Image (cartoon, rainbow, N blue to C red):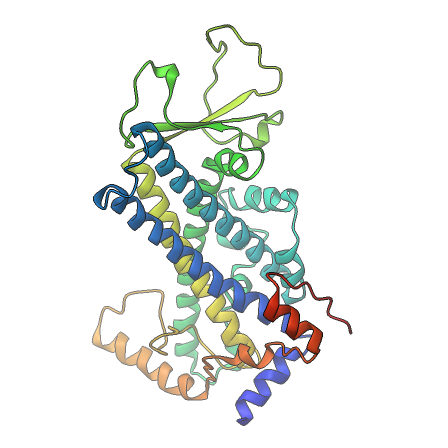
Length: 360
């Protein structure tokens, strides 16, 4: 084990960071990436359902419903990622000691309060959340740089914060817009698929087909932005709905897929940037590091370097900092559990699920 790795493990084990925090961030980064890959795979699946005649035993309306269910699952997964990312933002702003607890167990009231704050239009410094801490940007006092280099990085960090805040705000809009669809997809399944009889139009193709999600919202603050009001709901025969007072109609068209793709792109960039920076913070004991690309191992900047002088200036900073940074590929493997109890090993080998209480 190298000296830098030993120092990193000692810091991660300390109260300044915490193994639980490290595990939570590492697993969130990896699982988010896998979920996004799954979502992208769903897109390929929808395209090939008919190309390879995979649904030949289903009638046309059932095919529409199955495609709708795939997109609903995509929205569900996207909302889960947004929700978890918002809780992570909140936790990182408060401190590392809250990350594992909040990310493992959180209630809807916490999510609502986070969304409510991030929905507001404020100057960067006036938000409740410290975006520098959220993004894991380093403290410049630990970096041996000239005053000009520090000033360059200070502006660069402001660029990172503003661009990430824009992504966060777009994700908040998406989460708010599809909130009822998300809720009905995981609670009660109170929605109808296949089309809309209310429009008196027979739906025979997936494009422009619709899903209606039924809910109840009594608090105006919890209603999605831009909702419309219907004073009369015609039905044959007449029905008196005593509980449902809100309907969210999801229409499957090109614009919906574009919105989903945009949200996925924002999530991919935001989660990768946050988790990479915080991993660098932990690996370098909170001191000498800068934002970098995990694959290329090169430093990244929030702005386009226009001139040759700008490129040379940034490269000069990189030459000073990069050699001092510890960039592990699999430091988290050090913290993987090894089960010595033969009964546990046997259960894992033979059973479909093994639940284990970790005794201190």
